[in-house]
Length: 114
Image (cartoon, rainbow, N blue to C red; front, top):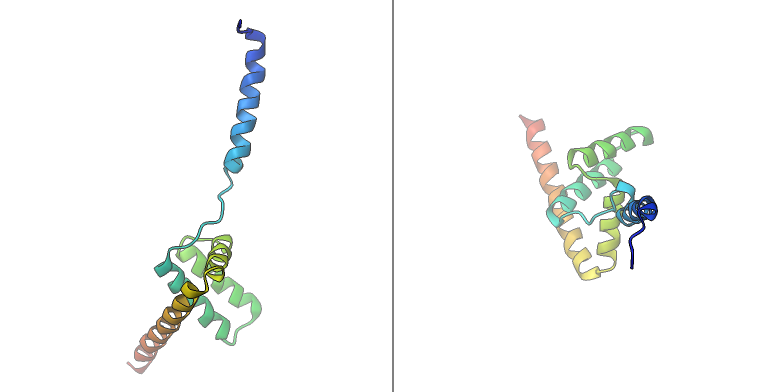
């Protein structure tokens, strides 16, 4: 089989298209957040949801939490889906999240008392 130099640009073009389609064109796919980090994020988000603030300000605070932990809303949703598919792990996460909320509130109360 003889290599045709005229078909080389076409081959390169198809290779590049294939590469970009397989790599998602550089779009990051949602990842499951590490357990400890997820507990911390989820606890802080639940505390924000309980606060008597405007919806806009709550959203601003939620975004700040995600930025602080260098994660995205898509990663958060992916992680929730992951734990929803494994109820025994979700129960553990919820228990640890409740504990973390209690710790954060206790620390805040101690700061207020000083």
